Length: 244
Image 1 (cartoon, rainbow, N blue to C red):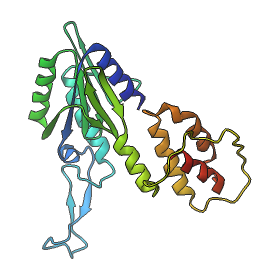
Image 2: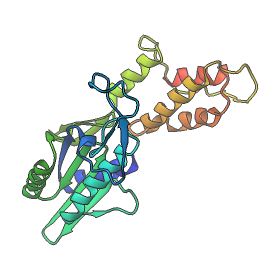
Image 3: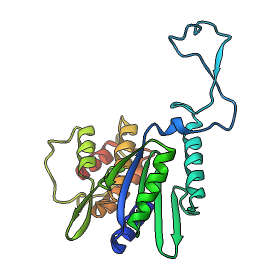
Image 4: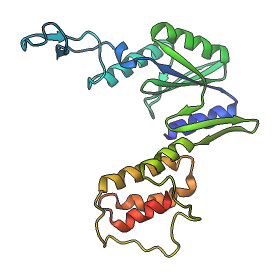
């Protein structure tokens, strides 16, 4: 996520065009590097014969190797186009030339494309469209739960939909607001009745951690409740609800 934040910051400061693309049926484009077999699918005339199997020539959804095979194919295509993979984040590819800079960020089948040359971005989209079935989503508006709203002042990031989904999951859409996420006299300990749904606690805290991308004011309180994810108590859960 730090990569996304950094990329957006650079693009905004440099005045670069931000574009988003979606690869249709991404995992069906991949070539398998090893022999893979599967049972005949239901409805096949010979599916009742346990001795018969199908040999896969391409990856399919549900196959453990599919994500890696897709990444390998896409990264190979980008590398041939002159992109270099970042050593810090392997989902980031950069192409720097004297007169243009292009950056591609990959998240499974979603791509963020930005750079200082609009014609180069259009050309890249055209080349990728020849290789894969691509849906051009235009200017970047929504990515990984983060909404991007543009105005004359620049780009505004928010997680409005993400927050609503989180409150709905916690059954707190109708809750009353509080002025602060933590009680000023709060004293936390490991003592107390254990919370009977520790997985729910971990899930909510994990989502709150992701929310701090656009709500840094919650970072301190979220960092506190995240310290008790191994053994939460009912009191810890009450603090999570207060943050929500």
